[in-house]
Amino acid sequence: MALLNGQTAVITGGAQGLGFAIAQRFVAEGARVVLGDLNLEATEAAAARLGAAAAVAVRTDVTD
Image 1 (cartoon, rainbow, N blue to C red):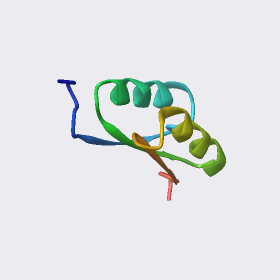
Image 2: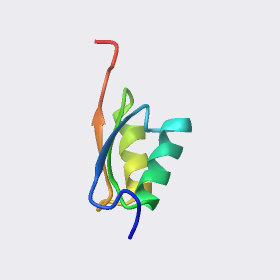
Image 3: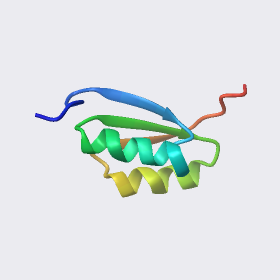
């Protein structure tokens, strides 16, 4: 059984870089992830790379 099986994580800055790397690891450990980032197109592409069953994308502005 994976460490995060059945858990959901919200990851801001998830479209690229460290945020995306964290999302990859969480998915590998069994979690579903919600990726948030300013650029919705890039965030949707990142979610698609992780798989539709594991990730969803939302436009997120944490400064507002």
